[in-house]
Length: 57
Image 1 (tube, helix red, strand yellow):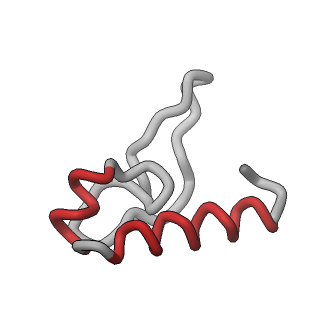
Image 2 (image 1 turned 45 degrees about the vertical axis):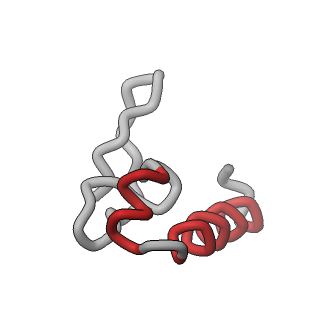
Image 3 (image 1 turned 90 degrees about the vertical axis):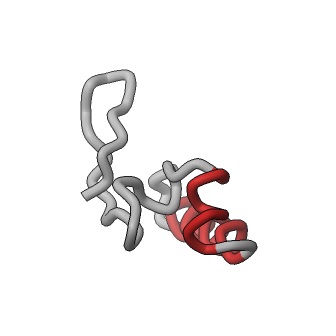
């Protein structure tokens, strides 16, 4: 699970990315680029659009 904590104190329930303790929405670009290279931009965009479509972002 993602280790991001919202201001409300609740934890993010999304699965963390392989090699990271954060999900695609909460991983920093620096860490993401180190792990996934340029693909991190696509990974983050796809995760955001999926959550937006589900009405959860």
